[in-house]
Length: 460
Ligand code: PEP
Ligand code: MN
Image (cartoon, rainbow, N blue to C red):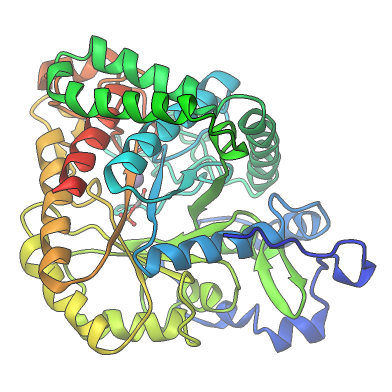
């Protein structure tokens, strides 16, 4: 896969802010006249527009050639020649956007990717829920305390007071600043040793050694070790062994934010707030604002679909979000719940196949398996997460389609948010380290266990 560069020596090829005529040509504001779910309750829309004006003038978070490159890599996933590993926090927060937290998450993502690369014998495209994952769709307007619900740091604060929950448009500027800082650090560290295969492999060896289920993973761990040493003995030396490309993604919920960071480049509109943007389950109305905006940009886009999705509806969605049927442009992220995946997913996959739509199929085994534990915490059971991934692989084996990837909420810290796994986290232990701002994440150990289990599934 040759890397494509845009010729930035040509000043005509610098991304630019759309003028009124271009905004019209690319229909970048058509969403404004469409029904929109999950509208942030801002008091003063004039202030939102001021903030959007500021964001229209800042340097974007990512570059168009990177966005194109990700789309090309996802085309490989679409054709069954690569695998997609996407993961990170449910919600990034300003306070947790520290070097420690971001690097811990990144390490976990890279560790999982190495295990999956081996398991699938395929290149793994790595995408973080990072550098922009600051907006959350919510099921209710009020939380359990009766306060306006937390909607992500892009809009309001998690702090449990009325004042803190007021939506403040200025927060979009902080979200931009945090995203830019994170992307800057990641670019530097990924080139500076963080992604070195030997280092990542050593962390995985530590995991196998210390995990209560280590024995189970020893066989694959040993095989990877031999493969790595074999490559070293052969004198294999390549940049790819020392660096990795990780792309940034977030949910496209705060349309004003993503619209303000959109630029025109080479005859296309790019949302340069992140490489890949996805649409959530709660905002997938085909005639709605979110889907419309995502249909106008050149980025790879994801669309979550839950158990209520119909085969016809998903085909319509594919045609709307990817009218030119470009491979790598559209990722359908299925989040059915472990009980539904084996029944709901097959007719959807069959219909999309029959319609000839080019899609990457990705499994989010988190969002269909959330429940409230007896101790009152929102949680997920590790076994159910694994079962949904297993079901996803079974379905794609039956339909002859490529199980393209997984989408996980994870953190590189030792939190106790999901029950189960080899550490056997129990319901009454959730309070020990329950730190998420929104949904429960797999901790480091649980994430790696999942990667080893998926690697096993991929080998069989
Ligand atoms: C999420 O990914 O955090 C999310 C809200 O997912 P979904 O839209 O699938 O519920
Ligand atoms: Mn979530």
